[in-house]
Image 1: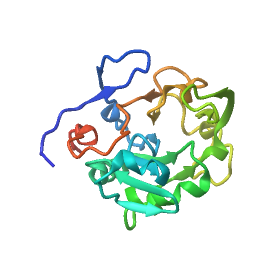
Image 2 (image 1 turned 30 degrees about the horizontal axis):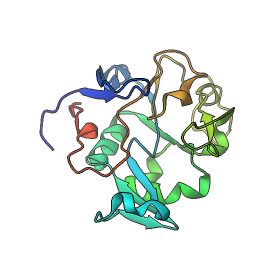
Image 3 (image 1 turned 135 degrees about the vertical axis):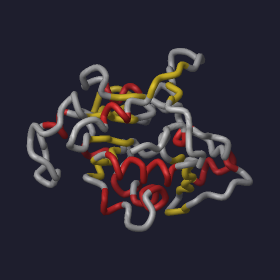
Length: 211
């Protein structure tokens, strides 16, 4: 990876085809003596998962991991990005996928020894049902990720005290803006989704790796 890389990220706006640029506020989160909380989405941010029935969309491409009926493609620079995050932040993963569909993706993106560094791994079970369904896939419900569940330590297994994290020291990185409808402003960013394997994709590498 280049020593100096751009510190900006492309934001996806589903209401427009235009692409905007937004400074990724990771350095801001890293200020102060205590590590801040970084919550990462799985599919669409660090990896792309394809069901075998849709394998024609990735014809000729070799997946990084195959599990069950899914093919998983790791986003370029994913390993370095995850190392960067683990060194500087308390990192958790929150996916809207079902729990049993997460393991294959995790094995792909975290690598040996990395998974134990995750503060938590949440799935669809920890999401809030919106009561609405996806326009493109009418059978797919839309789920919300309520950060208050983390801040108020909804589950005892979370490795921090209630009130340790808040909107001031938490950032959610997700590819679907609707997931954050219950959260305060400026607690999430929405990078360009990784919806098709592309070796030229450099989004996760567009962060300057500094101490």
